[in-house]
Image (cartoon, rainbow, N blue to C red; front, side, top):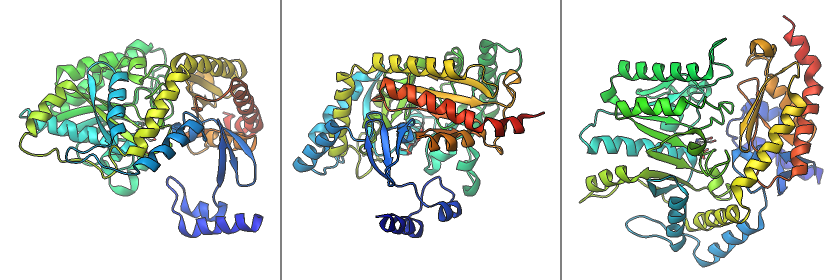
Length: 461
Ligand SMILES: Cc1ncc(COP(=O)(O)O)c(C=O)c1O
């Protein structure tokens, strides 16, 4: 058995190129082979179980082996394993799914274009924005503004919109015309003594200055996650999006809402834009749309944009789409996912579990000498480590305090995610039990205790 495992690891090292992995390090460490899941827990090849506090990659909202999703996929595979949505065709269930998403989405966003990944969903928003402006006689509107530390995907345009250096470095990105403004992080970016409201106003002013410098007639869109995920669970100040929205409206710039993480309940409302006061012209959805049991994503556009684009394409076709856009098996699994959310009365459940998680984290970690911030909404949280919490001084990326806590947590049977050096992300499946939430908090607090001597040595002024 262990020879088999060893040989699997050797084969993995020899043939499998892992995303977001240091390949040389992988040659030494080998893979973590995950062999099964049960609810919010996973089991590795040696039989060790972990609470999966990140729902995989912020995505497996219904845990790792939900029977209803398995059955829905199997039923559809037996009936119609593939059909496409090009040139007026469609599987039946894809229509139902479009209608269901349109019903859930905020007012005015009723038209759904299916893709297969979050990157495709965000990148499709950019194509729609370009086409929309061109159709209205403004083809010079090409630039897209995003934020430092934002994450929007790995394809070339999506990566250009990311505000994370490791998405750009090796590739000569961002592409020209992809511009970044300050991250709305009240913990790291707010000046000493500055109120959250004043910070939000400063960010809106900076955005307006950037637009004026670039030339408003060259700017197509602004893209934002309501709550930033991969950049460290950044929750902007309450006034931020309304102020940003007013700036965008002044210059005819579209608001693109990346709901790839926040969509489908994560922040305690169906969509993060409702939690954070955004008024999107388009929306990108993925991950929890199917609990990631099938790669399916969606781009929603407003009725106003639809009307412009539909007129524009009369006599020609809409030149976009993927072989697997609107795949019937993905549609079946996504529809079942939405049914499960309905049956579990998702929103109150997320809010209650989120409150338990937040209360637990605060009870155990508030006042800890090296915990700088505990923040969250719904069931997405972050704990930020700090060398000097009172001064909001972090340990810095090189020391990687978050990574150290993360390793200690893993040794205690808990999977989290470390980001930006000091930050630990927590984004558990919605099916996590109360007992597992308490265990998660407990294991994280113990993991922090495990590394506290090392943190203390580093934190000495
Ligand atoms: C906010 C956000 N947008 C887009 C993406 C890209 O999604 P995918 O990896 O499915 O292409 C991600 C992935 O984590 C994400 O977090």
